[in-house]
Length: 283
Image (tube, rainbow, N blue to C red; front, side, top):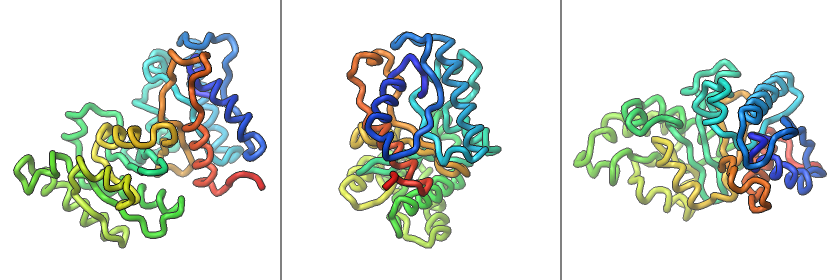
């Protein structure tokens, strides 16, 4: 359910009402004793315990995939959650480094894989590597194939304005991105476009020119993804041995309990999790 003081519990109730006969849903977490809109240490602990329980159920095979309700990183941090986000939490739970999995946003018009996630912009630029770009591109291609793109068309963003205009605005494209694009193309056996100018590539992808885009840092990919498909975009952790998805929005403590929160992204997350796990709606 995510943080019980946020919109998660009410969205879950809406999901059960609309999808409970189509999917076998198992609810993890509770909201007893927590006031909506009022985050507390108790609620944060309940959210963390639900995350831990989801790992147990995934490892035991009792569930085919997990869809997380929204949590507050700030409040989780106050109760001992030592991860930048849920992406890194699930990676560690399954014996992987955060750098071995990829955060993706999957929407109807735009599908984006991030080379780095919850880092300062300075660290994201300094840590940019060919291996990170290739890893994100491979995970993007694998996910696209699993949802029906047989030969996915993938573009890789440049880092600098206009992908540096041939070196006028930086050399990261020549030194890091171009070699990564060549290696990724060879690894996938597909043509990969890039480095593409970041200010136009998402518009081109949204119009159907590309099936997915590799973004080099968090906001480069998430701003266009949420701008185009906010109410139906799904956060996917690619590279895990299990299926993990979540809606693309936060806890919205200010909206909790007011009947204004929309369940569209959570509904989309459950549909996508079922598709990735190979267990769609019941006939």
